[in-house]
Length: 225
Image 1 (cartoon, helix red, strand yellow):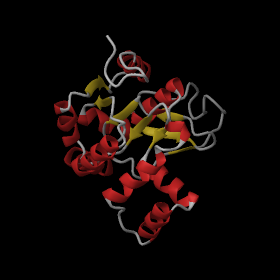
Image 2 (image 1 turned 180 degrees about the vertical axis):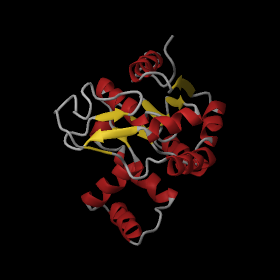
Image 3 (image 1 turned 135 degrees about the vertical axis):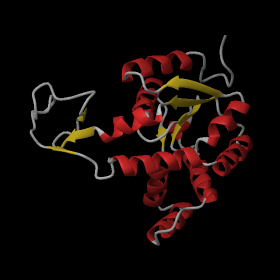
Image 4 (image 1 turned 120 degrees about the vertical axis):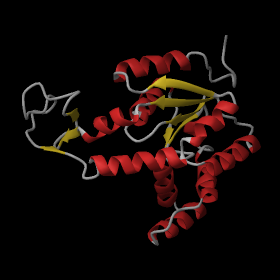
């Protein structure tokens, strides 16, 4: 099963991708991780990308897609993959389509986690984590059972991401809606888009995702009826 997850920062893509990867035994692939792995492996394309990143420049779409092409040849992708954060633009989607067509390995499904802009800002801005074990909390939706004490490790130190403030979050979200949201229409026209309400509780979102995935099998490139 080849799957793309779409949704803005804070929509829960990472959480759902991890759950899907565990359930179906397929890897979660992100652009950053693929670039780092390729560079560490010392491949020609990976070293080229590292040189570009070391200069502080953006890696081109073509290089990213070529690294992705190398990555999905590895054995852990034999039954499929999950793409989180890639493609980000229509240009990248076109490169990806061309590659997958050449490999006769098309996408099965694109899942959009649909969210409300203002509620999402509130969700992100209120996040904080335990400084010791990394357990996540929220000012409104998930506070420690005992004030200022982590539920998991009983640590008493907490931290917030410096960029989890309203102004920065709105900037990040606008960048997503400007650059990546057009992919929703792109994949809708390809008849492979399914939509899930990403504003529900995590377990409810996961349940809806699993119901959709039941319609797809690793042996078929079309929904099973």
